[in-house]
Amino acid sequence: MVLMILHDQFQATNTATNEDFTIDCDMVVMAVGSKKNTLAVEGMNTPIWNVGDCSKDRTASIAEAVRSGYHAANEI
Image 1 (cartoon, rainbow, N blue to C red):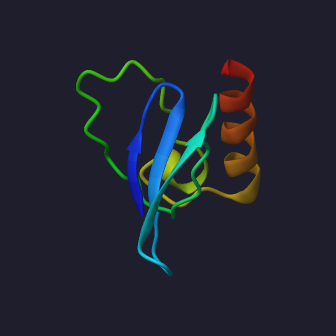
Image 2 (cartoon, rainbow, N blue to C red; image 1 turned 90 degrees about the horizontal axis):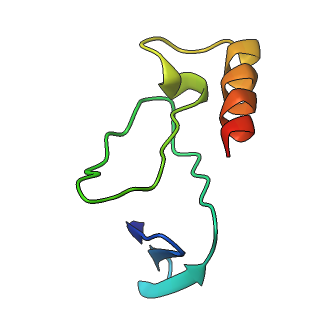
């Protein structure tokens, strides 16, 4: 379970052991399903891209999903 995404860290809980952990990182990519998961982004200046199935109001075709991921990757 994700606890927090900071500027240079990712904090989460290992659901198997129930232990919190932190990973130092420059970028976080999350594959979390086909519906858009709205995040509370107040005070956060980290860019967020919704790609694949969650980038539109309907399920994406494989080509649309890959294309949206490709365009997001080019923005990074």
